[in-house]
Image 1 (cartoon, chains in turn orange, green):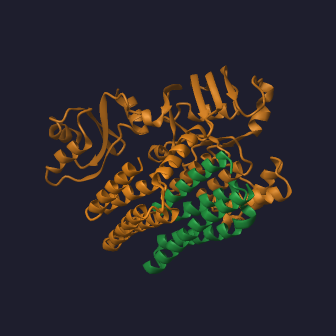
Image 2 (cartoon, rainbow over the protein chains, first blue to last red):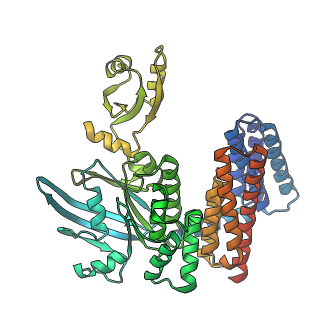
Image 3 (cartoon, rainbow over the protein chains, first blue to last red):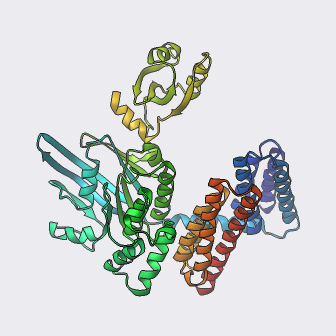
Length: 426
Length: 99
């Protein structure tokens, strides 16, 4: 058995050694996997991680020091062979430990209970001639997951969030919260539920005073007193990179930092449910991605997992962090599932491109590629084609034409944008 | 050390390692801040990690603005990542010693 494992490791190492000259990235990936799988010495693991980090950094700077890294990786391979031969490690024992640990970890995965479950909630809204119905909404918001609510304007996204945040009362159906030690709720419990939910509305409120003192005040009214209060506010200020702005007032903060403050305000007292209504609206691209990355890290916090529901029109950004997508169309759930299941049973592929060609020209050029429909949405052209057609086929075909500019092309069949675009035509 | 904590350490270390690979220097230090806090080691390493967070912010600003030469940037990047690795070790050791 031990001999077999040695042979397997040696085979892997030989493969890596022959690959390293051709594809250093793949070789370093394989080496990292090998060292992680067989639980080799942590110093070796860290060396590989630093080499991979250097490689990625070099890639950013377009520099060519690959021969040094090839030599470093080969050194590690040689070292691993030597370590095995001199029997310094008992590979079999390590593998067993590794298998035992992985199976044990499977049972220890974080709990996936629901923070909120809505069962067929309905809400009717009437203002002048504008009448709107939200119908039969069934949602499950899990701890440690981000649920994104998407849809066109006026389809009920903000209303749904307000209902979950207990800012509005549903006309029918019920909402079950895991926030109080009760199984049944009455409307009287709404005040208590509101207190336990962090809700960041679309229009941010104006506040007086300084960032830090406001955070301390919020933490205090949520029950964090004395040293704990100071520690928590200090932590959240540092965690959300607000250090430089802790003595700033509301008008002195940029839109991005006003939103960041709201997030700090919501998180300083460790809520179990965070509701954000269009938080990306006033943020630039870099702030959007930083904000969402922070949100994802905080939501996944293993000790205090939090359920997050967020509405946004920035579908590309939201796709990077959301676990579940809820698509609202005219007040009804048009899609409500894990993001990975988007487009699983699709009958056509959807591509988004930006080109100088007109729709008629595109039809002409792509007529043999199984294209079903081409339409313009905003500044982009959307191509609906059968599932055998790939984006590469389309690009290859278009690049054959002279003087055609393609500034953007991507396959959105399995992104949340597909849901929106499907609703336009099919 | 109890199993929950072992699992937690396993996941956290793996996540920080992956961020180091992708050179997300600022996120490495921010996750380290969470890591430290969640293992109640704050009294010992908190200030050190805060300084590292400040260094990483400075590094990312310098990198974005591009006024610092590449060698200096590279030294800063490596120094932050190595410190992050050491701090993970220290926090794990501390946790073992108190568990």
